[in-house]
Image (cartoon, rainbow, N blue to C red; front, side):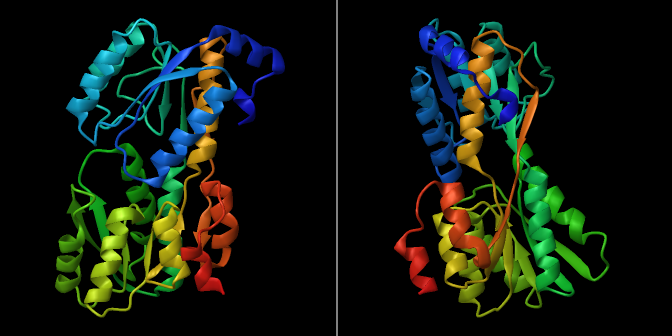
Length: 316
């Protein structure tokens, strides 16, 4: 983004610095992580930075804390990109990283009690509440009234909480809708939960999931298995969600992040911090609405590649 764009002179200084950075994600398994990783790798390579480690703690705050404590002790690491698994449970570990003199650029969320600029260089985030709001507004256009099943991630995770808040804020104020909430803790194991939710609510008019692959996709599987015909809205554009929209499944639309653009911006923010320049506390990356109508155009823009045949074959 413009607020952290680099001049040619600043780029030269970063290249001369030969800085080392590490990435501590929340988990490994989705398109968002892949695109963030690719963007950070590509941009750091352009700027002459070295990535000395990439870590995936699998949504485990204790594992993430242990990784961060190890990184904090590395003398040759100058900066860390990270997204906290739990903003409370990982505070002490992030504090060790900050106190070790390493620059911290956060993705989407900041540990509790951290203050800018003393504790971290900045935060780059998608507008996750807007992503949920988009799903809610889409649902309003698809369903006039009735029960809406809401799958909730029962783990304290700010990004997802914001999505849930955004979705609910649209429909809660309308007496025509009743929200039926079902919580999950294992994203890859939500099929049975979705089946139970649909069985308990055979008159459900729609369903929302905080992201598509896997919870939203498994919910769609359950809808199909039970022979129901209800719309689904969710968040995040990836190949799985693109295929589901392309083939005219129950998935009608998503509010999406732009993880590649986010990753590029994070690296530029880190570059400024490593040079000792002032950095903004927060940069927001817009969240576009995506449906089947604009899918092909948005796929290339967000995922940085042409839609695969598994998507395009449904438009021929």
